[in-house]
Length: 113
Length: 114
Image (cartoon, rainbow over all chains, first blue to last red; front, side, top):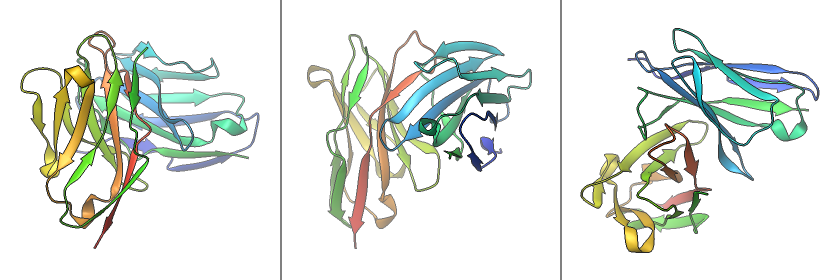
């Protein structure tokens, strides 16, 4: 069974631009979560989608948004990029229950110049 | 609010020695508790999970963790460390009514000396 796939692996953007990251969950998984990982803040929860609906949202500004498609694939978008948005963005999938084991992708490394 | 503390930023052990990584959490009820491991350039892999039942949980790669409610702790242990265990270890906590929204500790980096 294929794992969680995140594309692209690396991204370089400049301040003010926007970016879209993609995540394909494990087949059959209906929940997709996004986390931001930085050396200073560690892993921080962005949001979780389940059956195309946002189920949970972390404490991030509205510039961070996401969506989930009917095939459970998910995208997250960051608009008006800031230098502080440079981070590893991790996507994780699970079957959809509560408190479940998360399967993580390798992440998208975003650098904002 | 929930919080997770991993007091040890970095630990160095010799190969074959025992290991204990500490994790303390702040939460009113019994939370979901997890330990994940991250190798450089990779995502996280689950080592083990606890929610209820036996307070000593067995995981993959020979790891185990013990839930101590009185101490709000969920420490990870391994009796004999292998060089391949060198990685970053994260403790995480979740609530029963928030789906899969988890709070992660800041991580403990493990170095293994041959």
